[in-house]
Image (cartoon, rainbow, N blue to C red):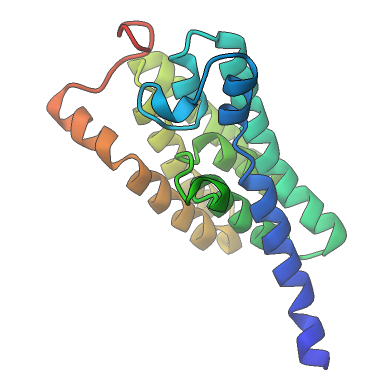
Length: 202
């Protein structure tokens, strides 16, 4: 009986995180604003960058903030209800965003949600994440490059700040982010990746 009770908090943290992370804000907001099915627009991704391709900058900004917010909430709420389970909530949220059961496991690429997660787990690493993301975006105008660079910075900065306990889960998230961007990597290598503000659909 005691061993069964020990599994309740970890399982609850992962499930709560997954449910929060799986809320497809980009898809919902685009549809509510009359923009149609986001999965049929641009890259088909449900994240803020693809929302921007609809021309609705306010909805894109809201998607970015809500995806970030759900990542942070999935860390803070499990920690509040189940102390010590923040990382499990974070893992659940990240998987929920990237592989939501409601959308047949075809979700977003995880960059904004991961930023919320990192900020909530260890804010100094989160600030590094934000700085790398914004810096690369400003320098290159390539959303995918900025997002991947930010994701890579997370386990590196966690190690630098001495949060070795966060390195493995953040590294796992980074690898998923890179995997989800594999088509973008191909386009970057071929020189055909669109730049924000310079491409017709960006």
